[in-house]
Image (cartoon, rainbow, N blue to C red):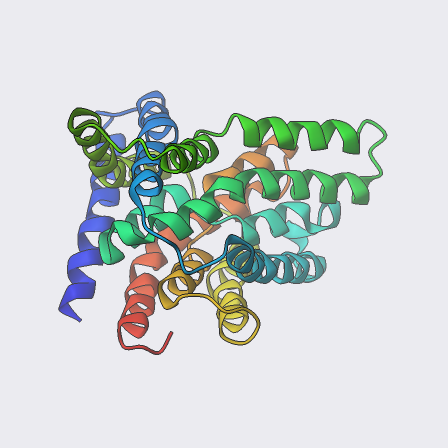
Length: 315
């Protein structure tokens, strides 16, 4: 259990530190956004580029990993849409905001640092494969979901598909993976200077991501819509990891470490993009905000239990 604590406590300690600095007004929302942009656009892409450019042959296939993770997510998405009918604070636009909150996990600012801290950089490939398409795919699905239930005349499937393609083509994480793959195929290797710079950026990804998460959490609230909040937490942090676990155990064949990354990512609490979607459309804002705040706090315990089960060989 001690290795779990030495992984989880520093991770959540950095989040608390960022939260405390934000509450003390030493860091504001603009500073937190700047750190987040550094993590998304520089640090994590550098980590993925270096890992892919220097990696050996891989045992896993991205299609199997995507089927396991996004298959479990899709089932959770449908379950959230159906359950939203019974929860007044979530019963808007066919439950689009609820489905987004139940499916969109905090992978970049919490899942990635947690996985790297516990398993090391050997998990960079599977986590990069999920991260690279996670946000664009879910944004596309949420927009389509909401438009279909609202019968929005202004919605254009073609325009939304173009937005999806543009987001993928300009996503720094996708570009980092692609550039690393091309560099590896070219057999160029890494110059010691470039390698050291990439290593420094990669090392910065974990603490800066966690600190930025703490700063961002200071802007969320637990007020109102408690039934909706607990429903979203149960869907995101209980149902989805169970479904993804069943997928990796009985449906697809993955290397054990890849399967563990998929399950760990599935268990992450609701991420900020779900709040952005909810706030933009003014739907289920209080419930989603509370799910992010309380879910992140609960993740300290749930992640510890999950990592313990993984180390014990039960997952």
